[in-house]
Image (spheres, helix red, strand yellow):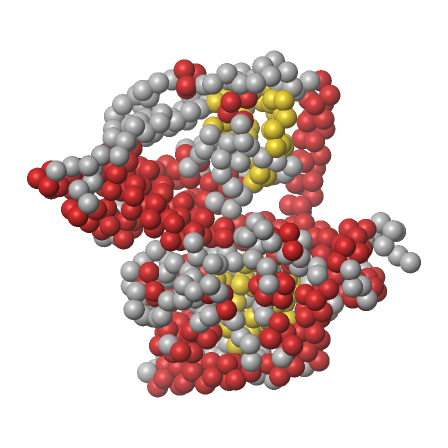
Length: 615
């Protein structure tokens, strides 16, 4: 059997590597992380990747050049493999193609004159490490820096660290001549089980043949999860102990929405799985019909549903979900994993791709939200001061930094203005705490517009609106004054809850205190919303609350009519909206805002519409 490299067969067949699982022959249910909804019923096909034998190894000074040559050969081979993978994309669904292609391009960039390869070569020369050891050490050092960033976007950090580790894994396997996993033997209708699947592995899956996927490791926000969702394969990741419990040929029932897999199911579990499969097919058909229907309440109130976008690779998911535009385009992706700052032309090209893909639907572009706690080499190495103190989230970040280094803001404003003729664009300012910051940003904005017009650049007569993120208690409490300077508000509930409650969700010791339904958070949201509505100014919610169908009645009752969320959440949120009456939502919101006990608020939200939330 040929491998991805096309050079060697697998050193050991997967059935030799299997470990005997516990409770053999008995029904066994395992819970993992739901990543791709759907029900799969079929036989297990387990696949184990041959471990890489790469013990730490040092070299002598006279071997350094030979090791660098080995590294260069591994880089060249890796490039050939990625080129073959890109050719494979043509047989995948369009959504999967558009997800993986940019990722493969990022891998290719890392095989150029990247920080990873420069660092590895330096370790070979100065630390006298073998090539595979140098690659591993440098990749882990870069990944550690990325993961140490104090950033709300933990999934994004994990994806970026995973990209570095994945290209290092590929280089190491090529340096050690270790074959890659082969997925060619998976029988039709099987449920694939593995310890872990990389995005490149996922690209080799045939969604017409594989019923489902389950792995011991992985998470809901990684590239593999995005790929599996794009392919439409029911999947759960992070099901600890799965590969030890399953045996090839076992029957299994996988629920990608619940995050469970039942091995060797009995009659009751099998019948339950068949019923769930029928129900899922019916629900999917129902949600698919919602794509072209408006998000409108039973009493005729329209609600705008938009999508958050972190990287352009997610654009197919947005189109598939039926979003009415992009409510939050995070531009940090332009600055990640590069040594130099993206200039105006580079930014223009990136924004053009997104705006053109949206086909006239509105796009809200948030300017760079960076602080010294985030790993952006192009910024941290001399361009802007770093802040690695005990409270980096409270330091020079977001708009504060951009006003201190206005050349960064000017370049970004210029690129956005130049693309504004191609669609409906709005600009969003992050980390605003007082009106003077908005005034200063607007002065720069209008100065850039005048400069572009003098150069002959055609701009719309009315410039794109300049809005403000409401994500700190200071901004919420000063919303009346800030509203006089801004064109619209976007409430970032994730940061607002963090700053209000002084809780970092990533800190295990205090994460239980994080609560977006805390009455203090809700009152700040209410204050900001009412300040906007008094001036008839648009206001949206773009944090995690927006994508939770259970919270939609409360948000609508507070006066919110625009929600921006992860694309996958849009169909169910739309479904919830189409069953609501605005008058009922307003009464419910008044009842919630009367409460001072978070537990009571959660109870009211949970019971809304059941009849037990009244009285």
